[in-house]
Amino acid sequence: MPTITGCGRDWTALPSDLLAAIASLLTLIDYSTFWEVCQPWACSVADVPPSPHHPYLLLSGSDYDSESSDQFVFFSLPHNTLYRLSPSSTPHQPRNPPPLRRHPPQRLRLPRPRRLRLQLPHTQPLPAVVQLLPLPPNLFRNASFSKVVLSSSPASGGSLTVAALYGWSQLAFARAGEDRWHLYEDEYPDRSYEDVAFRGGRLLALTSQGALLAVELDGDYADCKVVVYDPQDEQFGSYRKYLVVDDATGDLLQVRRELDSGDDDRCSTVRTESITVTRLDEERNVWIPVESLGDRALFVGVGSSVLLSGKEVRGLRRNCVYFTDDRWNLRFSEDVKGDRRDVGIYCLEDGSVQPCLPPDDRFNWPPPVWISPSLSQVN
Image (cartoon, rainbow, N blue to C red):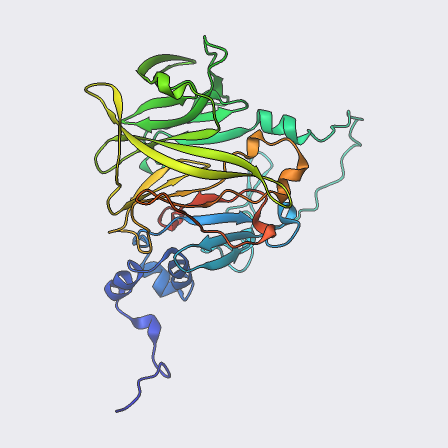
């Protein structure tokens, strides 16, 4: 039987519908490689998104000084593979720097910014300024955002509202086109927020004190109304809570993650002990236990939580909760860089926890986060 090889074949001449069908089945990493093969292939799949994919773990850095590294590392759980990506080598960028364009009044425009250096004319010496000292890590974490959620996808072109938790779990919001954040001044100073989510255009907030609030945004102001109050949530202990919107059914889920602090041979650690999932019964305004997620899986941690189906995403472990360490803003010492991160997969069926991150100290800090890039929007 003769062997078919690629020698002498013009693979750029493959039918565009065949290329599109192939691209729709590729994983995200393979899709980006497919795009870069040649111009005809790229044009054929410009409007074809990659197949639904398993979220990646984004790990900053590739060496022992990860904070100063110029690389991003993506970890694929289904393939147990690390992918390294430099910001300057992202797909869809030309190999040669694009030209500068001049626009009045005296402005230079760079269509696709890269690492270029411009020699500007000499100007008069700048006046002396006050030296700005680095902000201590504990103060920086107290002023930084711990979570940001969007009311809709920016690609939809409609109105967009952004809600954020900052500092010690305080609430802020802004709308597209505004030049400042609106800080919500809570009438209850001791109230702190665990999570926020948009559902049907309405902002919902979950408090540490067991209340689910509906936040009405009106201009510069916000008004909170209690939807559900669960006094059993006002208990001592170490835990995290998340809001998850089930896009398939419209249900609102609450994920409660019980934590345990312990000591190992090297540093203080926090470990997930158990996870429970409840669903909001809107007729009775109570949370109902969810015994099983079926063939689906939850992803929680830094960023928006998401519920995915194993029928659409390959390599997904059914009836499980994938979690990452999102307590970085509560740590004050530089020693936290040595802490092992609380990252794993919790099985709701038997309560077991499986690790999902390589045991490599280089990926301890900054803590890993779930990310689902959308190359279809980049195209």
